[in-house]
Length: 73
Image (cartoon, rainbow, N blue to C red):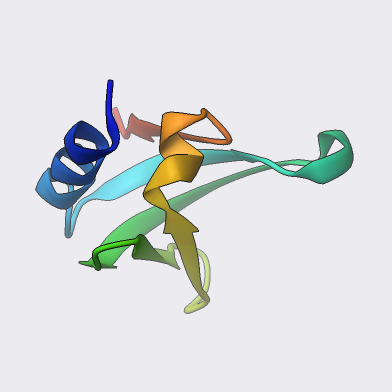
């Protein structure tokens, strides 16, 4: 998969609630549900479901599997 496919896939999920798993530094793993609110050329923004906090991620985070995105069942 390349970065253009990741951008396209993330853009297709815009407005949907998804599950995210972020693998941070020093084995810190954060799991949360959020809605993709906007996409830009290098990053995308998500709004967390449990509060109004907004986080940004790069498409390369998804590409290298630092951020794993799954759909809500």
